[in-house]
Length: 148
Image 1 (cartoon, helix red, strand yellow):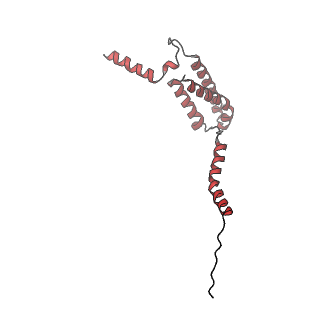
Image 2: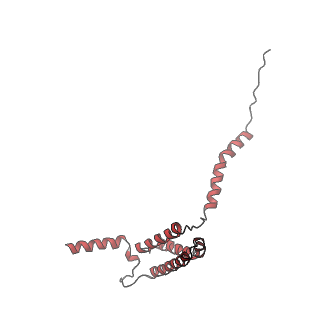
Image 3: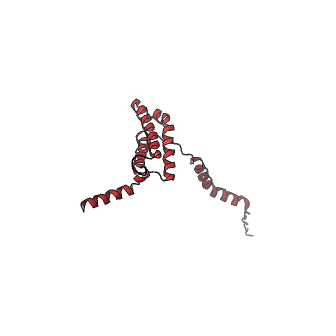
């Protein structure tokens, strides 16, 4: 009974971790996608290590940006294709923590310009409304009645 319980638990872990996505069908080797991801990951980590030894994190951010971006794009494609397993997710999480928290690097987001434009428009919309309402409405002038 103990052996069956251990086997059952290991099988549950294997299934929940999606390990079959990273291993070939006969479980003899890693898939090509997994091998390519690991190669790209190693390139990024080597770049991090090279510039981290110099102690200049701003240079690390600029020099390693291309390899990190390529790794990020590869991870996104693998996520869309459902070829991720827990090992790849974990290694990408750790790489992102290194990039953003340890080295304090970041990408400027492409969607910031449209967000700022829409926010500015929404901010000035009430001002425009009240101003146009004031300008296009008839102003009632008060008539004062004088006592005679």
